[in-house]
Each structure stands twice: as C-alpha cells, then as structure tokens.
Image (cartoon, rainbow, N blue to C red; front, side):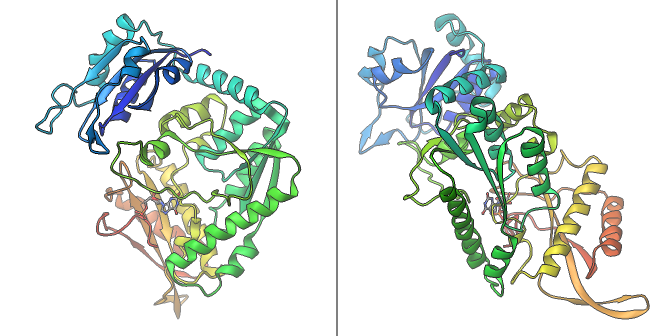
Length: 432
Ligand code: XMP
C-alpha cells in the first residue's frame, strides 16, 4: 500500500470530518475511527502513523464520559488530543480547516513521520490492488445511474477487474436529455465495459399513470427501480459482488457511535436482502470533491464528473402531479435549453443546481393571433452548501430573457415562463 494514514478518533466531536479533511489537505491520508477501536484493529490498518483524539460535545455514551482508552495507548502510536472544555466550547481547536492543519502539521510530519503521499494516483493504485485481491476471478455487478459516484466506481472497477464487471443502466424515462446516450457512449463504446442498457420508460410511465401525490410517485419510482434492477441481476450468472457508489459523507452522516444526528440516505440502488452479494465500495473514504478528482484522474468526461446533483426520482418530481408524456417532453426540452444557456453564459460552475419544472395547470395565452391554453415552465436556480438551506442567486436579466424566448419558441405546448424566487426555507429546492 502506498499511503500513510493518521486516524481521527471520534471522542464525541461534531468536527471529525473537518479534522480528517485538514489532515488530507496536508497531503496525508486520514480516516475517522470510533473511540473504542482496539489496539489490534489500529495496528492492522495499513501504514497507520498516528492518532488524533478528537473530543467534543457528544462525549457521553451509555451514561459514561469517553476517555482515551487503554487500547489506543497500547497500540504504541503517537496521540495528539483536541480537548473539549466543560463550558461547551472547544478550548483548543481552531475554526478553519487551514488552521486545524497548521496546528497538526508538526504532529503529523515531525512526531508521526508521516509522508505526504495522499494523492489520486496513489489512491487509485491502492484501490485497484485492494479490489483485485478481494474480487479475485469473481464477477461484480454495478447499478450505473450516470451520476458522478456510480460513474467513478465503474471506471475504477474497469481498471481493476475489466470484463468481470457488469454495469446495468436502468433508464426509467425520467432522465435528462442526452443522459442515457452519454452513459452508453462513455462506458460501452469508449471504455468497452459490459453494459446492460434497459429502457424501462414504458414500464415506469405506466406505473405512474394517474398518480398525482408526490410521495406516492417517489415510492413507485424507487420500488420499480429496484424491481427492474433485480430482474436484470437474476438474469446474470455467477455474480458474487455488488459495487456501490457510497461516499464518505454517507457513512459519517449515518452516524458513528457518538453522533446525535442520524440521517437516512435513500439510494435508488438499495436492494432487497434476498439478493445476497458482498459489497464493494471503493469510494467510501472519499469526500465529494475527492470523488470528482478521482473521476478526472481516471479520464471521465467533465460533463460526467461535474454533473450537477440530480434526484433519484429524476424528472418525475419536476413534472408536477400526474405525469403525462407531453409535459415530460416539455420538461426535458426546457431543461436542456436552460442547461445550454447557463453553460454558454458561464453560469455552469457558479450556480449549484438549476432546472425547470412543469406544473399540471394551464394558463391562457395568445399565439399566431389566436387564443392558446398551454402549460407554463418554471425556472429554478439555487446556491447552497449542504442542500439543507438554499438561496436564489441573481441571474442576469438578459440571460433569463434569452432562455424564456427559446423555451417559448422551441418547446411545444408552453406559453409562459416563470422564475422561482423562493429560498429554502420556506420552499424546498425541488417542487415535489
Ligand atoms: P429538497 O427538494 O429537499 O432537495 O430541498 C435537496 C437536494 O436533494 C436532492 N434530492 C434528492 N436526491 N434522491 C436524491 O438522491 C432523492 O430522492 C432526492 N430528492 C431531492 C435535490 O435535487 C436537492 O439537490
């Protein structure tokens, strides 16, 4: 293995990821570990050089205050401690990642003698070696949505086990314009992956016909996705491993023993338990920006690596109420125009998420000197850090006017364009 590692010991801090990121920013790999890790477990981790014990407000577990365990001391590794004051404030930990890194620099390099060898080339080399060892000559299955995480997993596995990987891309008919084609072009045509492409559009739209309730729609899409994927999986022989695009925040947010906040992540790739596979999760120690860097290093196209977030239920939650094919088509075309114009006007990397919405009501308009009664398109554009709150950025009026003109002249069945000015809260980012 190529990378040295510093372990961040979770002793109840809310800032474990800040510390891990700060250490990684020094060029040294870091992972978060529970306070009750044993000496044997610590010493079994490859190239571990030291421990940062990270105290914090959640330092009571089962009624007992967490203290540095004898096990950690027994491991013989150097330990640095961030203390936590009784008054509820950190008395030693600085605010920014940069300052935390500076505070730890001498410990990491002088005391632990860690080498600054954390980079994507080494990460990829290590993961490829680990996966080859683990998978041997067995077969692996991956649900490839075309999102950043599953695409990077596919590229990594192709490098590691090539033909032993089978990717299944389920097109539920609710993807954006050009997306299924891009997945096929990049993975099947260019990277020569075994790719099973399933066009399940009719199946999904039939299931969704007449269903107007947003939660019901989400449930149907999620359940149907699993059913289709499961059917495809059962057709394949001898699969022993299932690869998933789990990333570090998914694991950290689901809660270590001391964490108070538990957030359930729903992933449309979640599978029933009777399909028994061993999991391969090569990105589970990476933060989102690191996943993108990994994708770039593996040669994936920018459009895939820097793809904006897209909900699992896709356009299904943007075609409001009961989905109809004509409104879905209007949604897909208007969304493509919005994305094209944002890219052409330099807004692509500046606005976090932007899309269109088509509601299920009509309004009166006039076209070719005659009354028309058509659907509106709503433009949504937001900036956010964590998607928990969001604000609406100022979009130059000339760009909005150009997008409006194009939608009105190019998209069938639309006679009005609106811009949603609502922050989150009170609105959510998506409309359903
Ligand atoms: P809301 O609408 O709750 O969305 O403000 C916050 C962010 O989450 C995305 N989103 C989803 N992502 N599966 C996902 O993977 C989902 O079911 C889902 N629903 C919403 C949304 O696009 C926004 O970025």
